[in-house]
Image 1 (cartoon, one colour):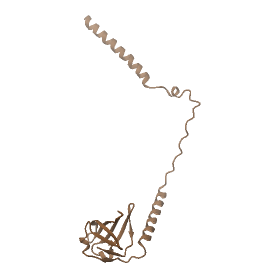
Image 2: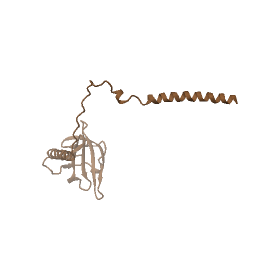
Image 3: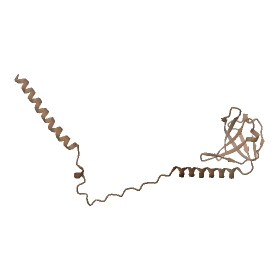
Image 4: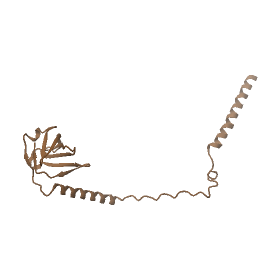
Amino acid sequence: MRRRKAGNMAKKTKTSKKNKKDEEEDELAGGASLDDAFAGDEDVEYAPSKPKKEKKKKKDLDEDLDDAEEEVEEISKAMSGANDEPPTIKASKPVSKVKKGDRIRIDGKEYIVDSHYVLIDHKTTKEMAIELYDKDDKDYQLRYFDDQMESTLQLYELQEILYLKRPMKSVEW
């Protein structure tokens, strides 16, 4: 029996040591109080708060979008010119046979075909696009409707992210 009691006594002293350590850690775990942390800082000057930024209202954003749309329309009209007559077409083969690597001349300037594909399928007709590039590596598109190619053929130049309509008088391939 003595051995058991001695074993129990040893356990008690170990647990009492653990409890004292836990109590000390708990006291330090909370950190310093606010009063202690900021004691003696009466002469400290803090930086002023940043002013609030004014957010644009939805009306302002709508007005900005309207202005941008008007500007794009004005540029497009100026670039396309007043002449909306269809260009003269000189074709050595049907437009459906134009493929990558072919050469197309528009107003005397030579372009290389990059691709020819259906832009939009409108069920009764297809809007087609011929992707072009020139020696300066500028991108262009010839767009037309497959059932009325002669009257709907239009040239567009890629500017930033928008294709803007360009005037043209003659096309040959």
